Amino acid sequence: MRSVDRDAGGMSDKAKLDQILEKLSNIPANTNDIVLTKLDKLQDQLTDLQSQMKVEPQIADKQPNKSSDSLTNTRSADYTGSIKRINTIRCLKELIDLGFIYDDNTSELMCFVCHQSCDSKSTNSTGPTDGVFTYPHDIKQNFDDHENLPRAFINLKKSVKRHFIDSISHQKNVKTEEERRAKQRLLENRNENAGMNLGRLCMKLYLKGCPYADFEDDVLVQKMNGTTVGELNHSRKFPAAFRPFVSKAIVRRVSDFFGRKLSQTGHLPVVNITADKATYKHNTRQFFSCVTVMPGADKLLQVISFGQPIVKSHTGFQLAMNMKETMDHLDIKSCQIEGGSFDGQYFHLGVQKALESPAVYDLPPNTVLWAWDALHRSGLVDTHLCKEERFQWVVDDTDVCSQLFRMFNWGQNHEKPIEASVLWKFHLKELVKLSETRFANSRRQVYLNIHHDLPAIITCLEEKILLSHQNPSDGKLREKASEAKELKGK
Figure 1: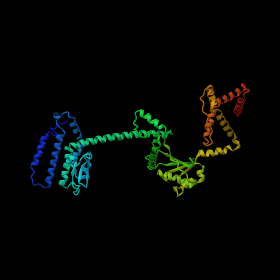
Figure 2 (figure 1 turned 180 degrees about the vertical axis):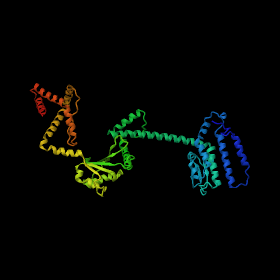
Figure 3 (figure 1 turned 90 degrees about the vertical axis):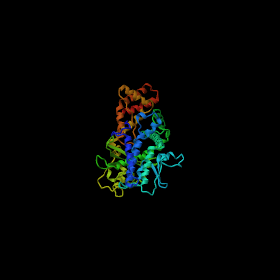
Figure 4 (figure 1 turned 120 degrees about the vertical axis):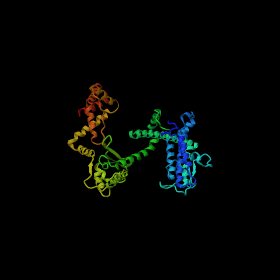
């Protein structure tokens, strides 16, 4: 820290003070406005020098007084900058920006922190120490660089500067306000951290499909781990109440993605829409989604769900309008539609033609690729194939797979193939049940698992047959052995 006796140029502060006072004494009494302006500048320099001498005492004169140190610390770099800025201010708004409030009705400029501190106290006395200064509202408030400042504005600037430098109560109020704001920021940060932590726990439930009852246990675990979770919104009801806000945020982000051009292509993201109808909770809904290009994601092609809007009419035009309303909500334009994939019913109803019509999107003909979904078509092929006599063997094999699943999927019979797989020294795969509602390709896994487990299955069937020979009087065993012989023969 430099000593106050010497500045950077080597001149002592006392010499500078004497020099300023000498200039002031040489000014005559009959002065015009220009001379008064110069006088004000000299007085400003004098005030700055006095404040500097007051703020920075000599090291030898310092005493270990904590209150003095705290007051000195309040005159920080922000204060110094504000004081220097006052000298160049030429409009009332700039003074207000330093932390003041101007009341047009009373023509008073009030220090915000001092005014806030006096709300609970008596405010009968006014003056610089109270942070209240008078400036008539009918006087001009903005001045150009070539204009002379009026005496009222010059006096106002002086009063504000003295308030910053000399007012002990102002400095205490500033320190109190800073402490209050620090506590408020700490509280806000704590609340934000607690909210983010609880929100992440909710997102885990949404993404994993976990029950809301798990939320309370998750909060308890996080609390025991020392994580900030606050004192509110710890009930299992919170995830359900929080979900609509998550949905709105996701919709907003998806809409922003589709409405912004990709930096990699310079064009809006293109989409291949897909839709299928299903009945859920007594309502027929259209499960609507798309495949789009998303650079920067873990996979270039991403599937985005548009929702499940209720279908009120099953005509091709109404289904197309249902899609358009959903995509309009996400700011998807007609130029972004590159293709669509539907099942046979959509093509029979003419949904693709309705989307191309002027009443919906007015798409140019033969510019969008409409695809009949391959899995739906394979299901139709499988249905027609099984009706032909030359493919009866497929139906018979499917029946055998169903009988084997019923035989070895329950109770003690489920343990038999496991024991047999140990003898054959291979890992047993679980048998898969055939489903009439799944796509045709789901049968492939049924056939593969039975083919893999066939040695263990044959061993179990032979064991059933042998067990009936050892106990010929047991009718139940004979019945099971007969079923096993039939399946083994097939």
